[in-house]
Length: 180
Image (cartoon, rainbow, N blue to C red; front, side, top):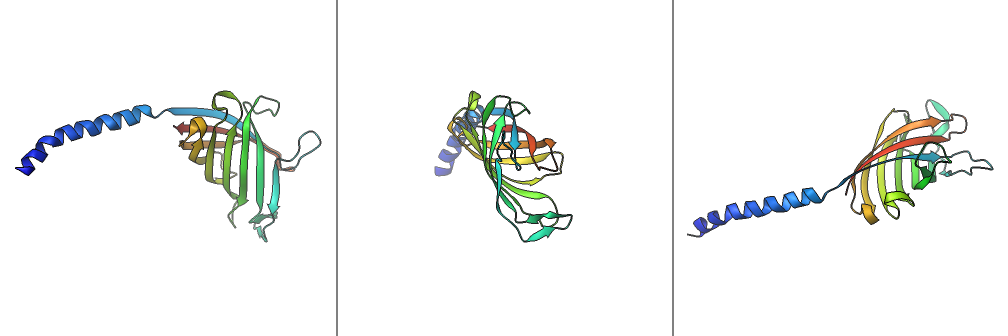
């Protein structure tokens, strides 16, 4: 008797579960953001450094005696709409990167992208990633967000737009695909 009653309720339960899952899927919004991050390691009078070395590693990389495993930089990089530093600012990338490989240019990148203008003003997203800096495209996992992007997941695609190998200053293109 109890089994028959349970079996009669099963279709209603499955229907209710399907409705909840559909509502949950419909509530998820996918957002695409594209912006440029200006990583200034060697500053000057008109553009101060926004990436500052705070730890010097002790083991040089095999292919570069000036870069060390463990080197760490704290960043507060300008984020803009376009690749030129004079284009409208949309926020800051704040966090750090550390040379985390003894054999290649691979960074541990931990950053909060804090939006101060545009449709995401007041929101932020958090990234925790491995960044092999000479790969043409690097993937950035999105591990969270705040404000209008609270609970965001997704990924970013990071590309080097331009780099000065003498100063180590770079402009990076970032395409983020967020699920909110």
